[in-house]
Amino acid sequence: MWLLIFLVCVLIWAGGTYWYLFSKPSPFTVESVRPPGPLELDQRKRDKVLKQGFTKEKIPKNLDAVVIGSGIGGMAAAATMAKAGKRVLVLEQHDVAGGCCHTFTEKGFEFDVGLHYFGQLHENGLLKVAMDQITEGQLEYVELPQHFDSIVIDDSEKRRDYAILSGKTEMEQNLKKYFPDDGKAVEEFFKIMKVTARKIHYLAILKLIPQWLALFLLKSGIADFFCSSIFHLSGMNATEMNNKLTSNKDLHVIFSYFFYGVPPKDSSFMINALMLHHFKRGAYYPKGGASEIPFHITKVIQKYGGSVLVRAPVSRILVDKKGAAYGVTVKKGDEHVEIRAPVIISNCGIFNTFQKLLPPEIQVKPEIQSRLDMMRPGKASFLLFSGFDATQEELDIVPNSIWLFKSNDMDAMMDEFFGMSKDEAPENIPMMLITFPSAKDSTSQIRHPGKSCMTILTMVNYEWFEEWKDSRVRKRGVDYYSYKMRFGNYLFEWACKHFPKLRDKLVYQEAATPLTNMHYLSCNRGAIYSADHNLDRFYAEAMAQNRCDTPVKNLYLSGQDIFSCGIAGALHGGLLCASTVLNYPVYIDLLFVKKKLKWKKAKEAAKLAKQKQQ
Image (cartoon, rainbow, N blue to C red; front, side):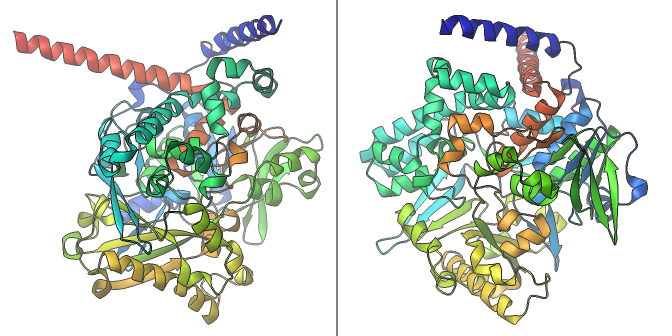
């Protein structure tokens, strides 16, 4: 009986899919990708693209969609829709487009704020194909050295340093050298990681098919029959799985070292494994800096009649009496400018969208509260930006990122730290990430000769800074500055233990607290990774229900809250959102493009081989 029902559902879905899959123009084509042009070094020309200020006159006519927020999730959704023939307006409250992909320059130093590196950009990789499509091939990348990450565990015992290597086989083999007695554990971890990477698309499909069908397949057990491994793994916490693999605590850290504010016991093993797999084929950094991403995506949106406008804070999503969104209002001085469109996409996070932008009478509706109850606010971030009057060689700094931990028991370490009082916390930070953007980008010394920069990231409680939340940016007083620099000074001194030449060459330093993130990035409670990535969020049924469409008709969500955190996670959130709005699975087009590129390369290789024979 169940099999018959399943077959009927599949036939109906397959028929509907065929009907619209081949009756609509593709937003993605091989032909749309052009050879990259020269790097634009003229800052005035860049600002004309990235800092186009909002005015009524700049609002495009006959809009098909408005996107709130210019982070990679919103920009990916906007560019995909633009290439499908839609006229899209992206509204950004900051004075520069890009969200966590934007950069800022102070005293001649350029800093990225959220993109430290990303993976899966090897030739014909799916993320590479997607990025090429939404930038039309104009974004170039610097491939980082094979040793792309270092993990340092510096507890009361002897300091241990572990190099993490990229490579289809090298990543695994290198870990076996470090842990010869845990070879089987490493092998099993990589087997699970491979299964996770190959089957993760099933979880994405749950967000694209009708929700009733997704829940039916899960609750009936049919989904488990066909691909039980990924649905089982999505609900496994990292600590439980790590303990099954090995008792070696250092290896536990390596299996879960990408910290985002959630201890391994509360996080998804699947997500942690995917994060490491993301770099298996190499780590990359945008040539010209992180702002190259919004720079080129903006041009694509403009090419198809849309626009990206900054200094455009959305104050309200407009909802009619029937409960359908029909536009937004933008605060411009004392005026609230109304902009209407049949589709509204919010890339500013589920909490900002539902709790701040929707009308009060809509916020309290049970279906809205039900969606909010599926998520928790994420842990806040603290960043320290440092500039040095010296080159990479003079400072002995490296292009790989360094993840430092004070203990190999991440659960206990994080629980203890986040349970500390406001006064205890600054001098007891147990983990941090050090990255040198200037050492990653080969054009850095051309654009900023003789200068180097460092960004340090750690996680903090929003509550430690909450008392200053009503004060104005840059005018929060001596107590605030003194408190935040207690964190900053501790992080910098820790970094100097590993890179001692930094201290004497330091000429600029600024710290970004959760309040800074809220002001410039509109992060809810200062969480740059958006909603909490706890285990409950990644159960298969939760994944099926946490989708791009919302209880408010014509209102959609994009970004990190849809799938997972990071640049890649947010980008996929944008592609899923575009698929939902267009009622068209754009991933099919990406796979077609990927296949065509593979065929094209095979033909070129065959032609070259034939020429050599002649």
